[in-house]
Length: 327
Ligand code: ATP
Ligand code: LTN
Image (cartoon, rainbow, N blue to C red; front, side):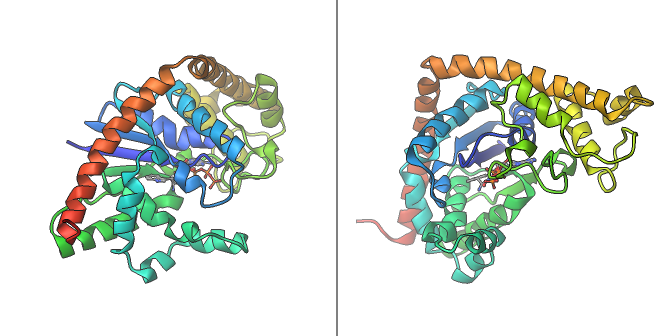
């Protein structure tokens, strides 16, 4: 009975990087696991100030986008983190099981607290809430980007400590890191990852971009001064990034794409990549628009949250009982 769970923070527009890094692997794996959970980590988004109106719109957009991208709602339990009141309650019980020292070692906290002079307590306790997200439903695997690996390991350590102190309660989760080849880079600066919080929109393709925007961004992507379409991440990060994108979206092997472009110039190659991306996103966008208009989304979320609450409530009661907070 292997279980898989992951979540995305609605802190910016859903990017092609999120799609390729987090959603494509989940769609591939959804039929291989007995239970799969996918949620919008809206409570985590609050750790850094979000405009309430924009956040509200984005939460719904994320859910519609998950499904438009191929996540099967009859197989995957889809929900909003904030609609399950037992998750923050479990998080508190876990906070009391987490060492201040181990939470202080989290790299994301160190980096984000350096970027903002006024940071919240929530930014510090963020990984414990993430542990609650993961542990309440006995998840075995957590597909995340490499930056989140340390947080999943913390969840595992906290679970182990809880089990040791109070008796067997949690399954120990493992991070599942997608292969390095699918780390999508910024088009303008292919040495860094394509990120939703990037200020220069020219390097980032969002899932809502039009064909014109996609074409413009890809045609202006930073490449090298050679004329050779071949995969070499170290010396040709721009071309390698475009090859990665084209390969994941078309299902073609990178070596086959390289062969097709022997003797052709970068302009022709970029036009080909732009066409693949635009074509894929157009199909997703059509589904997305239909989902946003209908009421299917609410039905899916209602079902998802019911299942999530039932599991979290049972885990919360079990934890309280074991910790001695019962009448
Ligand atoms: P932020 O820029 O605000 O940190 P982000 O775009 O990195 O946001 P997250 O919500 O932190 O997005 O990440 C959600 C998941 O999407 C990550 O766990 C990671 O697996 C994946 N992801 C994000 N960006 C990329 C990328 N450029 N390439 C591959 N995967 C990515
Ligand atoms: N911190 C993650 C989002 C997230 C998550 C989770 C991922 C919150 N809770 C539980 C996996 C499992 C991020 O920034 N991508």
